[in-house]
Image (cartoon, rainbow, N blue to C red; front, side, top):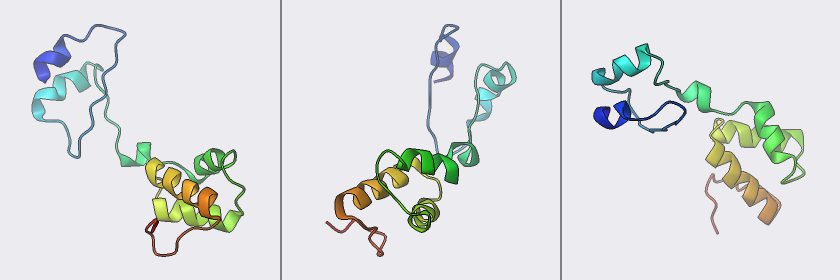
Length: 100
């Protein structure tokens, strides 16, 4: 992987996803600003971002919007799935599962 990343031309972006930090061999990419690292706090959505995503999809009162945000912990896929459930059923399943 390190060799492949060395061949990426300027202006081209590559996104790698991992549950752990990059190995030490990748340090030079970070130091040379050829690679950035985003952690969970940078990826998670804020309450206002969830509000903006929800607005065109479903009419939600503030309490339901906050519940979706709390349950999803700002995870975009979780927000999307819960909004679809509310749109489809008119409510948010209290068990935490979609339960179709």
